[in-house]
Amino acid sequence: MNAVDLARLQFAVTATLHFLFVALTLGLVTVVALTQTRALSAKDPALRATRMRRVRFWGGLYVINYALGIISGLTQEFQFGLNWSGLSHVMGNIVGAPIAVESVAAFFLESTFLGLWAFGFNRVSARAHAALIWGVALTAYASTFWIMVVNGFMQKPVGYEMRDGTAFATDWGAILTNGATWYAMLHIAGAVVLLAGLFMAAVSAYHLRRDGDIDFFRPTLVQGSVLAGCGALVAAVAGAVQLTNLKGHQPEKYATLMGETGAQLDRVRATAEASYGSGDWMPPSWVGVASVLMLVIGIVLVPLAWIPATAARGNPPDGSFARRGFRMRLPGVLLPLGFLAIICGWLSREVGRQPWMVTGELTVREAVADVSPGGMLASFLVFTVVLTTLAVVDWVLISRYARLGPDAGLLGDTGLFPDATERGTLQEDDQSSLPADVHHSY
Image (cartoon, rainbow, N blue to C red; front, side):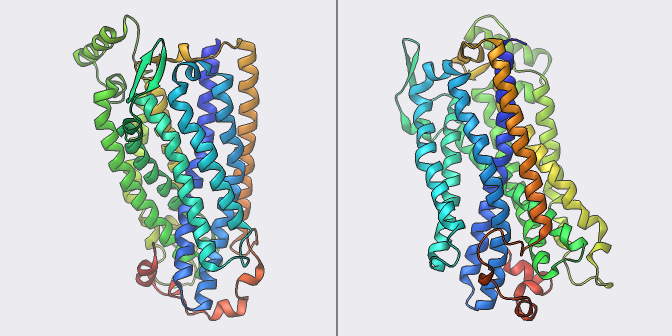
């Protein structure tokens, strides 16, 4: 493999692993913010404490994923300088500003809010504490937006002009309102809510199958299923809109994803050669397979994501939720499919742009840095080992903490929550039948 192939493979591995951290982080912070808002709205202290147990539990899982995901994000920043200096030289005037804003204004603000929130249990007022987690959520989405501004420009460059081989922004309004950015943001928002919902449902079903803390996990099974179902619908609609718009600014990708052949494909090839000169301007055909797999999984998840909620209806005749086998095991099957769909979607978007780094302006070969194959291989191995290790450690810690249950104590003080006797006497809406759960769910 040459340096270009190694650089592409390195970025593919790091971007994919990092995006898995990002997807779960965005989804979980949304869950935690909504859950804490519900807790704040409760007038009864015991009811508020019960809901804050959920904030503590899901917030602990979120903090683990966020902490380990930070390092994976830093490797992305390093690679622009290490491997893709051509992108900085040609497009730096445009891509540099959003990345700087993301790093300084969004990322550091997000980390600050998160630190204050994580160590602020019982140390700041309830309203201020809830405001902090909303600050975390909003800056997390703001961080994603600025990254997608860069990515949207690379997919569909707008609002710029080339001067002596260097791009200069002429209309920041067009860059910030780029359709390739906003449709993708909506699609990502649906996907991360889907993933968080599947994660909630899978963890809740795990405990319910073992009849552990039923009053805690039965409503979260419902809430997770509802979130996953809503997220699946949003992701599907936004994905369909994105696919329709591809035909205008990325006809080569559209033809590949749609599996066009014969005269249709020949016309696309001829148009590309007329615009860019002789050569193969079509992305690899296997991207179409990834796109189809994502589409199939999405279609499957739209109806199936709602099913686990029905397992929480009423009390089982024998007192054990384990008897509701299929519906209780379904979330554990759907969760890996959610991760796989996200990976396939990312591959469709990024590899589908090949051979362009910036569509129509800068190829991948022109963007790669002047690094020897040996140096590129060394950095590829280092980054791959580091990120794979982080992913394994992250999943081990999350799995362990999720199995320990809501009172493992990762976040907050034990005095924040009522004791076991008080919890057992709570007449919370979440302990009633499914209709009440649905009424109080997100």
